[in-house]
Amino acid sequence: MELGTTALVATLAAGGGQGWKQIGELLLAFALSSVVGLERQARGKSAGLRTQAIVGTAAALILIVSKYGFGDVLDKQVVVLDPSRVAAQIVSGIGFLGAGIIITRRGAIRGLTTAASVWETAAIGMAAGAGLWLLALVVTALHFVIVLAYTPLGRLVSARGGAEADYTVTYEDGRGVLRDLLSTCTSHSWTVRSLSVVAHHGQGSTDEGTELVTIALSISGTGALGGGAALGGVTGVVHVDAGDADEE
Image (cartoon, rainbow, N blue to C red):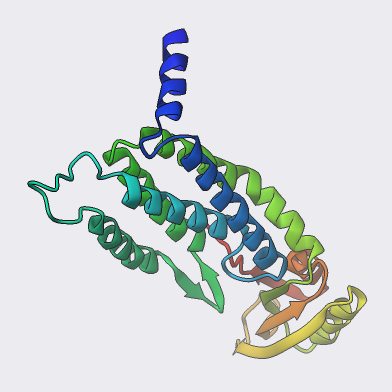
């Protein structure tokens, strides 16, 4: 154990691309991207706290790998190419992979955190492959801070911020449910941004033969992101689909 600690201290002191300076740069990127993520989360935007933190930390790691990860293979007498260009090509390739993960359903964007984590995993692999093991370990640990600790923090920020939320509500027609839904929004001081009919189901949609109407409802205000329970509690509402913009 003492030998391992001595080796760690020696590695940090020697630098070589994975010293205290680089760890400080990673932590700074982590902190600054988290601040950006908090702002986006409070406003209910798609790329929220976790997504921004992952992207920022991973981008910093990729840059550090590009700067320091190829020094052991460069030789002005023999090697005249720039191996760090490989990093840029990997980033481009992972970008296409991440785009395939992101989907849009009923106006809600899903898969952003997953796409960002794939990009982050690529950066961790690049660091490990370049021999920058300490940086790879640090970013791996930060990943679990983001996805585990930031999830409840993000929900707290969203609940207290004036975020905009989108809901798909299905209710029984002819019972004044829409009026009650709007009244519920007013009682919670939520602003109705938009409201449109998505589908109008025919007779026999329920056991009693009542027609069902599905609407897309967009609201904003304090607690709007957690308004699904209030909307679902309105008499006559059959189903409420709350799209999570930062869905894993």
